Amino acid sequence: MSTPPTSETGAATPARSDTRFARIVAIVVALAVVLYFVPGLFIAYTEDAYVRSDFVEVAPEVSGIVRGVDVKDDQYVSVGTPLAVIDTEPFQLDVELKQRQVESALAAAKVRQDNAAVLQANLDAAQSALTLAQQEYDRIAALVKDQTISQEMMDRTTDQRQSAIDKLEQAKAQLRVNAGEVASAEAEVDITKAQLAIAKYNLSRTRVTAPVDGYVTNLSLRPGAYASAGVPLLGIVDDTQWRVVANFKEYVASDLKIGMRAWVWLDSHPWQLFPARVVGVGRGISRQQEAGRLLPYVAPTTDWIRLARRMPVTLVLDPRPEGLPLFMGADARVLLFP
Image (cartoon, rainbow, N blue to C red; front, side, top):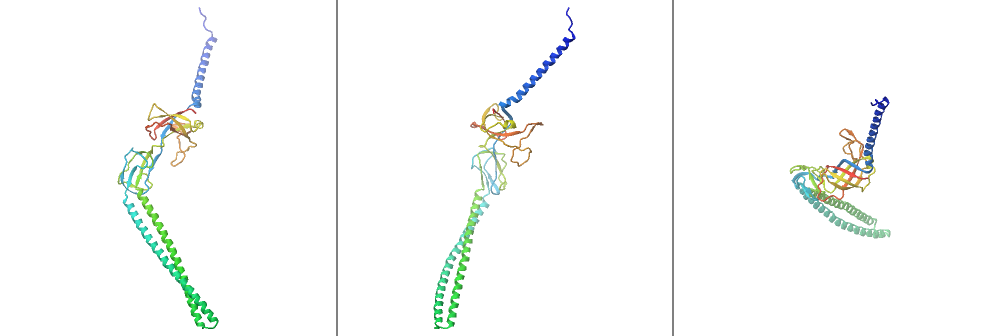
C-alpha cells in the first residue's frame, strides 16, 4: 500500500504553484514593458496625422454686384483663371470722370504757365524802366549839385525812380505768386493722374482671378450677390502645397530631424505606403484652444483618455505619385525610424 502524503509535501505543492504564477506574471509584465518602450527607441508611429494644404480665401479688392461666376464647384483652376466678374459700369464711369479731371487740371496748369511768361515780360520791362529812371536820377542829381537845375526837378525825378522801384517789386511779387500757382496746378495734375491710375486699377480688379493652382471648394457664389472688398467670395484648396501633419509624442518629436525618411498611409488610399520625408518639426503648441492664436493646438484627449502632449511634425510625399488625388483634412498614419 502507498503511504499517504505528509502535510509537508502537501504544503510544498501550492508554494511551487504560487512561485510559478508569480514568475509568469513578472515575465508578462516585463514583456509588456519591453514591447511598449523598446520599439519606441527604433520606431516612431502615429495615427494622429492628417493631410493638409493651404486653403486660399479669395476676396475681391473692390465692392459691387457680382454679374457673373465663371467656375463650378470642385473645378480645378490655374493661376489667372477667371472666377467671377463684378459689375464694371460704376468703375468705368469713375475712370471717365478722372480722365476729365486730368484734362481740366492740365488746362489750368497751361494757363498758369502761359501767365508766367507774361509776368516775366512785365518784370523785364519794369527792370528796364527802373534802369532808365535810375540813370535819369543820377543825371539830375549831378545837375542839382552844380545848381544847374532846380530842386523841384530833382524831386520829380526821385518820385519817378521810386515809382519804377515799386513797379519792379510788384512785378516780382506777381511772378512769385504765379510760380506758386504753377506749382499748385502741376501738383493738381499729378494728383488727378494718380486718381485716374487708381480708378483704372479698380476697374481691372472687377475681374476676380485665381491666385493659385487648386480646386474651388464649397462654392455658393451666384450672380446678383453683393461682393464686399476684403470679404472672401470663394475658397481654393492649393494643389501645390500638399503636406502631412503628424502629431508625435514629445520624446519622439525631440529625436526627429529635417530630411528623415518616413512612410505614410493615407486613408483615402488604403493598403498603400507612400515614401515621405520630414520638412519641419514644430517648436511649440498652444496649451489652450483659442481662436486666432498663431500657435497650433493639439488636443490632449481622445475618447476621454488623457494623452501625452504631442508636437506637430510636417512631412511631404517624396516623390508624390503623379496623378495621386489628395484631400485636405483626410486622415493619415505615419511610420518612421528615428
